[in-house]
Length: 405
Image 1 (cartoon, helix red, strand yellow):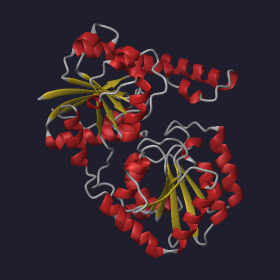
Image 2 (image 1 turned 45 degrees about the horizontal axis):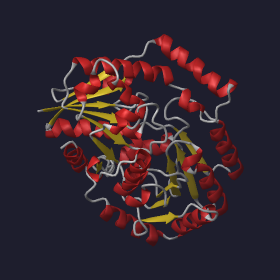
Image 3 (image 1 turned 90 degrees about the vertical axis):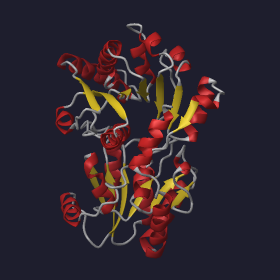
């Protein structure tokens, strides 16, 4: 049986108790592997007490938790505060886990040297490839390591040679393939494979009335209202500010806008941007509901209480799970022609708008349309179900397995 090591990003744990799309996808692979039993999976994850309790261990899957010393965590916090408050770095979040990730990568490097894997998959960040620089790991795993690209590569962080020697780039969309091909000047299509993101259709298609009612009560989401929902990180590129402005214009009667998420998943940190969103929401009134970060296991309930999902990304979003989850749930979707989104959503199953000077007005028009036209919501819902009928947990697992062949 093939031994496959998956090196997570070194930010959040698996299972995804603190959120994270990549961590959710890995956890889905673990769950399906426990059924199919085709691989021996070894997942390297940041340690978390809650994740360790939830981890599903068996002979086919081992989660290798790497525990970070408390001193390193404290030092990282100092580095972060210097970057944010003293140096006033615009992307200060990039400095939040630097020392912890260095420690994580070093521990992964040691473990790779002590084991013999048939395939090693690095998830989404070039710095993880540094685990091959020590202990003769590069020679040991040459022609055996893969790069699972969930985002574009803007900075190689000194790993150019390691990136050049990746056996295969596993990309979440054709958009990402083209971007990496251009960035690294790789013209050989055989070096790439598209592995489209999917979700567990059994979880995102459920309908547990009691749980749905309890969830709605917990977050003060009333009955009899049209519920528009945004879920994701509260960062500028996700278009949350534009969504609030559009909702302010449309402001349909007897509706609520639920904003589920936070600045950086379950970290508890709040950005100036998030505070600005709350100021705009206060001006609109009590029809805006901020839930904060929601545990991934409860995400299906969020979709079930929602009538329309809105993801107005204004950056090149590669393949957001929100799009895939909403279509799998058969929910009407308002989104944008952004990155890889059109490879999943289209004008038949979604209201999809261009990112231009008319975006806010167009979003407002879409909100008004779906608030007033139940038949259009029903049509989009039916089309979403048709589009996603083959987006299954098992098919994702099989596609993943085939990408290693």
